[in-house]
Image (tube, rainbow, N blue to C red; front, side, top):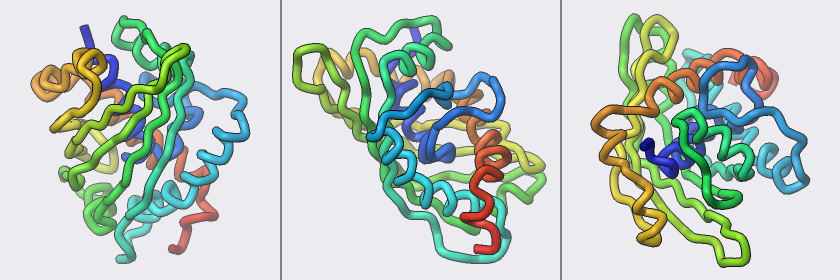
Length: 216
């Protein structure tokens, strides 16, 4: 059985590394991005808050000129129906409600642009911590944090491999019990989905906000 929470935390980090909005995918591929939905005011505010980070990442990937490294905080809410769609890729169900996650993103701009231009190059990101509140009906949300040090390999402008490199996980025993991060470190069950999200972001997603990053 695939790690349910690992999928959710990876989806949130994919919102930062690199599909910052994790909004509607441009194509119907097997990614961690969520399906297109009508946003609530809270979700719309979250998306707008991610826009600057998204533009900074696009500038890092698409502009070869040196500039500032990427450093920003992203917040992403995932509805129960979105979570069910994500974990269904692993043929499991989601037993709880909405999840709200935050992550501080740090990335070396020169490394990202260099990797995209190289025949083959791996980018190892700095250690990241994703913090999530998992809602339960009639109960206070459970809080869980997970550490990871993602690494993405690019070949001729496309991401071909992604590894989450899970670290320490903190949270309630029941919730942690579902987070079998060691399994993913061994067999890398999330890698192909994350690589697909990277490619969707660098192309279609960056084109959507071209005016925010072009020439910067």
